[in-house]
Structure formats: structure tokens, C-alpha cells
Image (cartoon, rainbow, N blue to C red; front, side, top):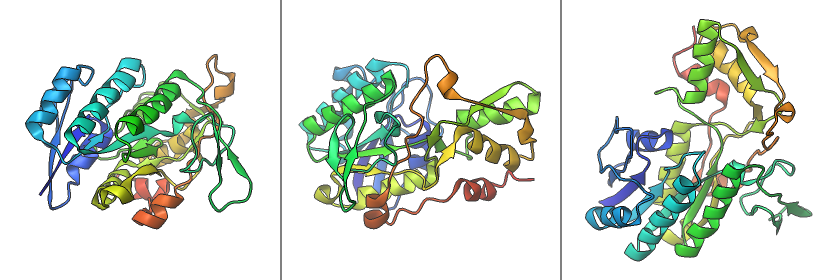
Length: 296
């Protein structure tokens, strides 16, 4: 029986992982302000290094999956992740760190799993060079920073980049805002020029558990667990509206490049390694919404 510690157990990824714990795994999850709906584990502020060390001492995990973060706080990304990685290193535990497509700047998509932010890397079987651009915002810069911190403290860690996570079991905030807005007649504005690789959070969780099944050496390095489609936020919103039987005409297309603080415009992820080595085959968003039982 392997013991897996999941940080951020009350978040989208954490709850999906806890809903799908495979046989032979004992999962313990941390949470900070929102109690766990599924699973159990200690309440802890991961920014508190001593508290994190105590959790590792109490749970003695074989592996930690670090999902916890908030987009608006450097401490919750950099300091918390540093504490978790340091504790994992001291404990000799394996580590799977969840990163983001936002580590890239949006001008060189699709991004390869071997690509590093603000560097040029060999394109691994493709002709030419994969020119990799720097993050476009603070969140991306913080996530890129902690990728390096994690691999420095746990050299054989698995760094897993993903994209927009769609949860139709407990609606993710993005989808909920769209549905609620259309139902109440509030303005719903979505970007047509921000392209991502959205993925069902359940497909993502299944991919993570497949990764955990690999031995330590085989699991090391960077993985992309994301969708295979290039979809704008507007296109994703239209799919959600249709699935709930709502009129997508209520969604106003807008351009994020006209926004005072534009984000990366195209950060599609190449998932070749995960497809080949994990058999990771995520569903399309149309399949996800169709299977959700929400469609009228």
C-alpha cells in the first residue's frame, strides 16, 4: 500500500484525484480554508515551513502530488511549493508538481514537453528549434520559477503542466460563471483570441494516477497533461452554453489583446510524451459536455 499526500485537496485537481484513488493507494489530502468534500487529511498553511514538515512527519508519504496554489499570491505559489519540495526532499519522497501552460508567453505554440520558459530547446524529433518565450504575467513567472525550485530540491520530480481544467461534477468556477450569467441575463464576455488546451479534470486525474504508477526514474521530468484541441475561452463557453440548453448568443466575444493587461494569446501544449508513455487520451470538450448529462 503506497501512501500519497495530495496538497490542495479541496481544489479542482485535488478533489478529482481523491474521487479516483486507485487500488493499492492510501491518499491523504491537505486543505487550508475550504474543508474537503471527498477524502480526509490535515488542515495546513503550506506557507508555514514548520507546519509542512510536521505534515510530512505525521503522514510519512511515499509520494506527494502538489496541486495547491492561488493565482494571485506569490507566497502561495513560490513559498508554499518550496516548503513542500524541501520537505519531500528531506523525507526521500517522490514528488509530482502541478505546473501550468502559463509558464509560456504565447508566441511559439504548440509548446513541447522539453521546452523551458525563456530558452531554446532541441525540438526532439522535429526539424528546427523550439524557441520558447518567457511568461506573459506574474502568475506564469511564479510558476516557471517554482519549476526550477522543485527540480533543484527533488531532481527526479515529475513536473506536470496542464491547461484549463473543466469539472462538471462540481462545476469549476469558470463554467459556473458562464452558466449563471446566461441564466440570469448578466453580461458574459469571453476572449476569442486566447487559445488554450482545456481538459476534463477527471481525465487529468486519471493521467496523474497513471504517472504515479511508473517507477521513480521513468516518471521524472516534464509532462503535459492537457487536451488535444486548441480552443478559445469563447469557444469553450459556447460548448458549455449548448450543453445546458442555453442560448450562446448571450456570450459576447471580446479580445484580450484589447485588455489593459493582455495575457498569453496561444499556449497550446504538445502532449506527445504523455500519449506515448502513459496512453493518455483525453476526451474532446464536446465529448466531455455530452457525457456530463447536462445537455437537454
